[in-house]
Picture 1 (cartoon, one colour):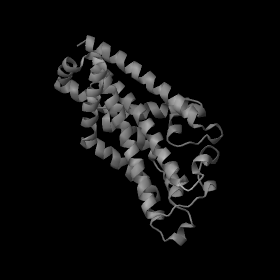
Picture 2 (spheres, rainbow, N blue to C red):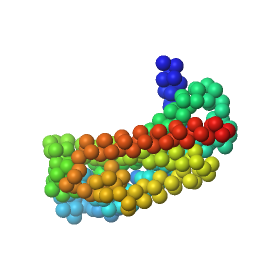
Picture 3 (cartoon, helix red, strand yellow):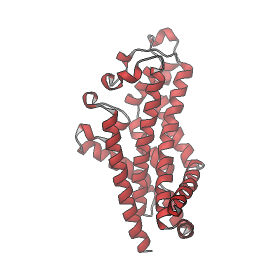
Picture 4 (cartoon, rainbow, N blue to C red):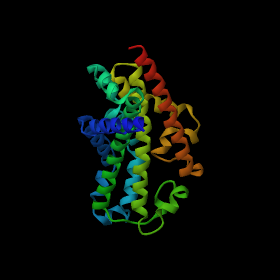
Length: 260
């Protein structure tokens, strides 16, 4: 029970530190700007010039054709993956371990950083969805949304457009949790915070090139393999990645702390 309380307390401290930092704000604005840049010339056109297409359509266009997939692993890592670098540079981690215990400090650092990275992406995508909804009218045309087969049940009904955009924001949250965790993992290996910022981008896109289509990490952000798409598959795959990264992080930190 004591360990659980120390993990929760440490997670809150790290999450608050992340979400009140300038890095978090910059990361949110970066992804939001990338998404807006793709469709800004279209969404401000008169309704008749947009061909009747609405909020979810232009939201989907930005997800698929902007630089969003490149910005996302950079943004989530920039938002929160430097937490341990901050503690290591100041020596503050020793005091925090005395208060929370080694395992409490480790898990609090992991959960605080990964939740913070996920929230950075979630906030940017949700803000973009809200912008599309304010400027554009909803238009229920599932045939004009990519990944029709996988998303058709979500698009059905009066709130289909909202559900589509909200679920994409939640998928971005999960992606941000994993890849900000990868950045945190690399911060244990190298004291240079810029390694933790750029390593997730490099690893993510090397994986994108090396893995078969159904295992590519960017499927969480933009689903291109429509025939094999399913939320269950994404959930299982991302959970495995998250747990594996957490185990590696704890092992690396144990070794780092033992070495002083």
